[in-house]
Image 1 (tube, rainbow, N blue to C red):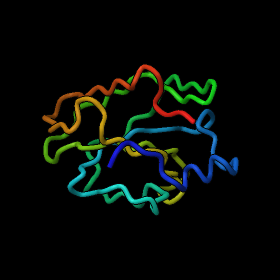
Image 2 (cartoon, rainbow, N blue to C red):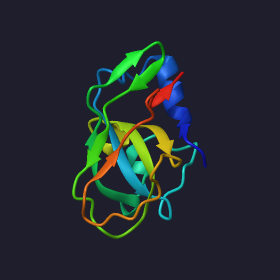
Image 3 (tube, rainbow, N blue to C red):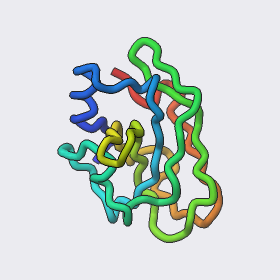
Image 4 (cartoon, rainbow, N blue to C red):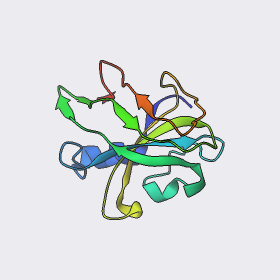
Length: 133
């Protein structure tokens, strides 16, 4: 699977039901042997707990300009060993996992896959954008 936006996110965006600038947006490392992109998935509860590696990290310094969404690099701290981080899932955090909208699935980010070793992992987004319309 190549980097892609979740279809339900695109639908919510076009309906005006999501605000990436105003809502907390997080990135999460996932083990692609435990989770595969599915276009029917729409919320964080669709990503099994066994597939999640470490703690999700908030995207800071978010900007939206000319249809481009960007943010500062993100550091996953003290990522536990075990499992291979083969993708990053971005989601807009809601009041519950069922209300946390899946945004994007990235599995062709530089440095992936990576096997965590309890150290920090830094993700530097493409200089042009995390995502664009």
